[in-house]
Image (cartoon, rainbow, N blue to C red; front, side, top):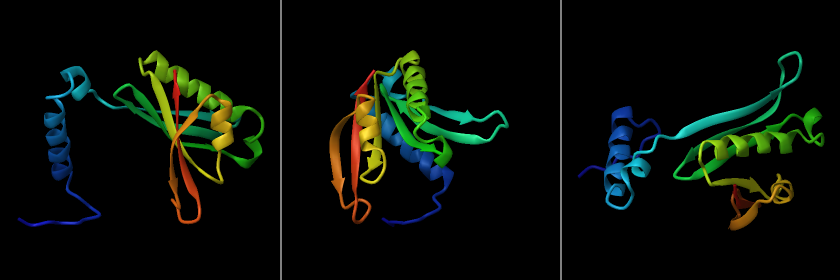
Length: 141
């Protein structure tokens, strides 16, 4: 047996891993869940000139939508745009049939913002990244 650690795995190897875990999961999950395709989407805010002011990127599967990132330009902060972006993402996820939204934020980022929107902390990773805490949050739609 050979173990290979690589930062550039072959697409074929990655596909083998995905098919393998899907095959394992089918013994525990119905086919429509086990082989459910990921839903990837973004919510983007632009000004009248087409300049991106902020947005969010998300991936959803297995009844959960994960907000991978949310960013607002400095001039767009404090105007309610972040809340509007999150509400749009939540509506999209709910309309697609997802029941929950989860996200992570760092101790110097937006924990109070998410809590104000109804998100609850379900986990913490201390010293990740070093000197900070990562908070894991979830909201039922």
